[in-house]
Amino acid sequence: CESVNLRYVTVSNSPAMGVIMYDTTGENLILNSVFSDNIAQDCSTPGGGGFSIEFAYSAPGDICAPSSLQHNTRSMYIFSNSTFSGNVADDGSANVTTFPI
Image: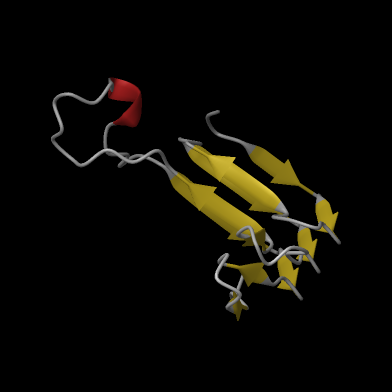
């Protein structure tokens, strides 16, 4: 995906991650939205939390990697007037960590 806009979205009480943006490039706007009480329910699998931004990994300069996995330098994520509360993520090792967003 490219240049995603989430406006006036509420994601709450998810038994896993609230929202995951994977390889989302361009200018991504998250405006006037609420992410609350998204909590991992199963300690055997990582999950939970309000929002995650993930990219496929390829080391910068790796000439063998397809262009879609090349180092991303042109993505922007703008969060404005959005609320994050009560989100808890589990890293799969039974160490539950509360992240700030």
